[in-house]
Length: 117
Image (tube, rainbow, N blue to C red; front, side, top):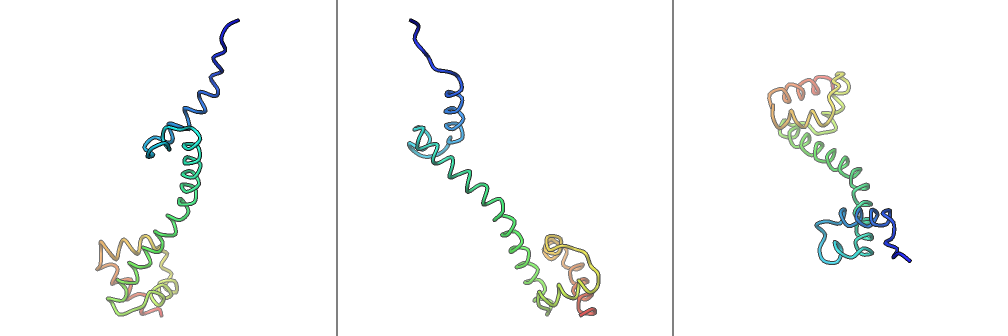
């Protein structure tokens, strides 16, 4: 009777797990069970942190806008309220970029917000 070498499906599954665990330390990259646990956890973190990244960027933009606004003598909330009343449709990402790279136009927006507050 011929020796059974097992199917390719299991080999493919194990190879997939171990290739995803590449770069992990110790047995986490070499032992199937440990690697599978580590890969599962890594995928959970990746899924969660795709959402967290968006929150963190929004926080960063708000911090930058607030710092630039306060240097012009206005608070973040007053600035955003004034811009909303003025009908300025710029999002926080663009405002943050303007505050860092183009202070002159940001100062113009601050003045616009002051006039509409």
